[in-house]
Structures are given as C-alpha cells and as structure tokens.
Image 1 (cartoon, rainbow, N blue to C red):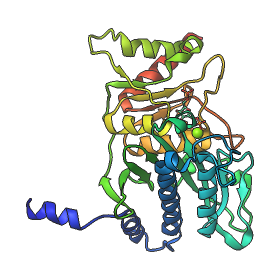
Image 2: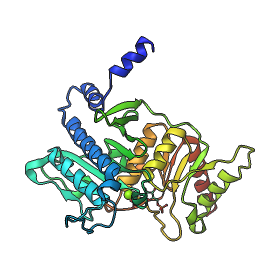
Image 3: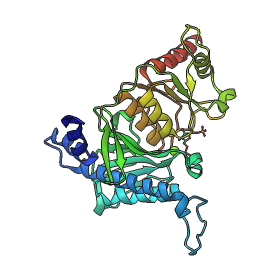
Image 4: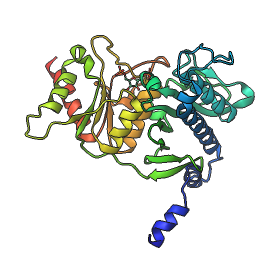
Length: 341
Ligand code: AHM
Ligand code: MG
C-alpha cells in the first residue's frame, strides 16, 4: 500500500469534521448548524442500531403489542419518530418540527427554541420494515424568518428556501447522504468507530442512466405522458438499448441507487391519486434538492419540484427525479401533452 493510501486510511474525514470544515468557510457562522447536524447524526445512529437489532429485540410487529416482560413494544417507525423528536428538540437549535408521523407540526417549547425548522420522515419505506429490506430517514432543514415568532408560514415555503437536506439509508451498510447547499457527499457508518466517514465525496449523478424505477402495478391508472415515458424505456424507438427496471419500494433506496448509478425514479400522479403518494415537504423536497445539487433534475409533471409551495404540511406531489437527460425526456412528453390540450 502506498503512502497516500495509508494516509487516507488513518486521516478519517468524519461527518463532524466535514461539517466543521464547511462552517469555517463562513466566519459569521455560530456553530448552530453543526450542533443541529450532530443531533440528526445521533438520531440516525440510534435508528440504525434499532433497525439492525429489530429481529432480535422483537421490535418488529404491531405498535401496541406487549413483550414477555409485559412492556409495550414500539413499532420501529414510532420509535424512530420519538428518537428524532427528542434528538432535535434537545439540540436547542430547532423551533418547528414536521414529521410524517405527526398530523400537526410540533412547536418546540421556548426554553429549547433555536432558529432551524426540520421536516423529516423518520422511517420511510413502511412496507419494507418487517421484511428487512432497506429503509431510511429523510430530512430537510429550513431557517425560521423571525426566531421570536415561528409560524406555520415558515414551514410552507417553496423548496428553494431549503438550506440543507439529506437521507440516511439503513441497508447493507448505513449511509448518510447530505447536501448543505453546495455539492452532495456520502458518509458510511463505521460500526466499530461509531462514526460516519466520508466515503463518497462530491457525488455527481450520471447525465443519463440505464435504469427506471416505478411501481408498474399502477400502470392502468397512469396519465398519457407517464405511460409513454415508461413505454419508451422498454421499447426505445431511437435504436438505443431498453432500460432496466429496479424498484425496491423504499424511496431512500430507490433514490440512492438512482443518484449513484443514474437513471430515473418516478412516483407519478394517477387517476386514483392525482397528486401521487409522496409528501412534498419531507420526501419530494429533500430528494429534489439532493438531485439538483448532484447535477440531476426533479420535476412534478407541471413544474420544477423545488418551485412548489405546499399549502398544508402533509401535501403530496407527483415526482420524476434523476439524471438530467432522463428527466428532460419526461418534461418533453408533458410539454407535448400540454401543447395538444
Ligand atoms: P411510507 O412513507 O408510508 O413509507 O410511503 C412512502 C414509500 C416510499 O418509500 C416509496 O417510494 C413508496 O412509498 C412506495 O410506494 P408503493 O408501495 O405504492 O410503490
Ligand atoms: Mg414516507
């Protein structure tokens, strides 16, 4: 092993060090963001450990079940929500939290209030939780306008107001992918150190990919452009090779693969659910933010995803995201449809 390779093995760039380096580029920064992020990282490590032990600890199962000690078992998604809410409020840096698990936004009590708003899905991919398939946490971070008076309007902003976003995937390894606004970086949890180490620096999504990812079981409800696009993936008319289909059914896993290998992930609107399934604030926006920062695109079928302004905290939107050229094709099909109408 040469000297440089040895040096990179011993000079580990942990996520904490990485964020502090980023912070030092902004002399005005007070360190609040680093503290907030360290609490998010703690939440991810806790959930990762709970997911890994789920089978053993009998955490899997219906919320409300009791174990042999007669204690009530918490389902993993309920547990993950509790973990993140506690980690975020105790950071002293948040004022409003929006979680997929809670109907109402949570306003942090004044003594613990800070300037940040965190929107998150504590454990996404519910249909995969009980069978050990990859699941994940998704989060986005905003800044409140007036720290003294946080209101729901601070949350109902367009995705352009997002300062940072990321996800943590609990899969064959535990990986945290983060963008604080410039570039996207991936950190893998070293379980022996208990630290996330930079393993994927400055991730760029390939300009065009060979994979499409969609729940084809909904095909009979799709609109024209979605149906045409998927048909094109399978039977390209320009002589190019057909694309492969990969669909885990966990957004974090499907988006992660799309980010690293290129291609497109679709959760379109359809006749049954005109706004699709995925939630604007804590599923669509963070993933759209990461895709754009990695050089890809995110489109709703009508507009650039980050230009949406949600009316309610749990609003949904159709989403097409991934490699720049692949999303461009979807946009062209929707533009043609609009032209015909
Ligand atoms: P959830 O928040 O209940 O877990 O639902 C979101 C998940 C995403 O992870 C995934 O992309 C999608 O639902 C899959 O939905 P479907 O099973 O309809 O294909
Ligand atoms: Mg979800």
